[in-house]
Image (cartoon, rainbow, N blue to C red):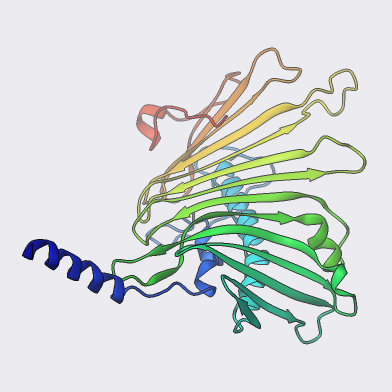
Length: 326
């Protein structure tokens, strides 16, 4: 009986120490889905650019595949910074109203802006939230609001019961047509869906991004898929895939091929990229692999057609075997 009472008192004490997660904590931040890639070696050597192509022209030049991977990481980070920074700006204010488990931020019109913003955050569990960021022309009626960003977020909570802002897991969807119209840019149709897990500073980060864009009257979207994994201070990988017609110059071969690249790297910056093209009008798939050292210089090039190659994978690659993205 005494043990049972002691256990109940202990549980009550722990519950009393827990802090309720507030609505601002129930949102991802730019850092939640930020991708990182080694960008300089321990000697501080700078990068030099390559002239065209997606690989180095010869052994010892900066790896083109490393630069391509770095460019893709910058693209994804730029997309998240553009949208989540706006989300953070609206959520930085105190809620305009709270109705039960739903908080509303705004309407808010930044100085000099032609757009009025409104954010709604709903608590679905103690540490789980859904949210939607909408906007309208500042002189428009409330019926003109459109949703630019919507998602869900489960907050990472520490042993002390406090929310770890910027950590957690969830997903969000960006509606490009609404974003571009409100920002007075050429209308872009389609969406970008992000799924992420970043539980704690020392735990593995995983981010998945699916881009879908519609061009002109074509009902078939152009897709680009990104898959990122990083062990803080350790190994990481970044995979990219898209469907595109590599025979655009030949009207008799219109089927899209699958292009994919997977890059992997060690904590010191050494890495390897493996590219593959297959399907569509191809009868035989093509592959290309490139390895780089801690200074991001190409050490090994291998390709399926054996047209050009250098180095030796067993001795010159951080990863000796290829690994292709789907």
